[in-house]
Picture (cartoon, rainbow, N blue to C red):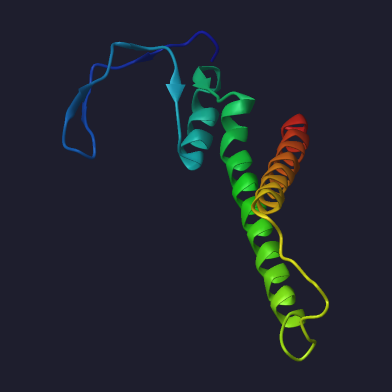
Length: 131
């Protein structure tokens, strides 16, 4: 029922055993628990407050950046293994191989982070447009 306010004069106890007095007139309900959000949305849909798109994107962007960093580290480790194989005595050292410099390693890792971040940005953006 639009325009309806929840009346309450109850005192609740939270998980830390602290008493919380609810106001007499509840205007908005904020929920961080998905199952509770669904229950609130059914009973009082006009009082539910949602999150912004950027608030939702944040954790996914961080996850994408971390996965990109891990992918860059894995690529670097595989390159090091191949480098050591080709530099072994079996193949000889006459090939003149040199491993990546510090700057190149840094660029590889930054590229991995940017790739993961951009992939997450595009993916989450597409999903949020559908919602």
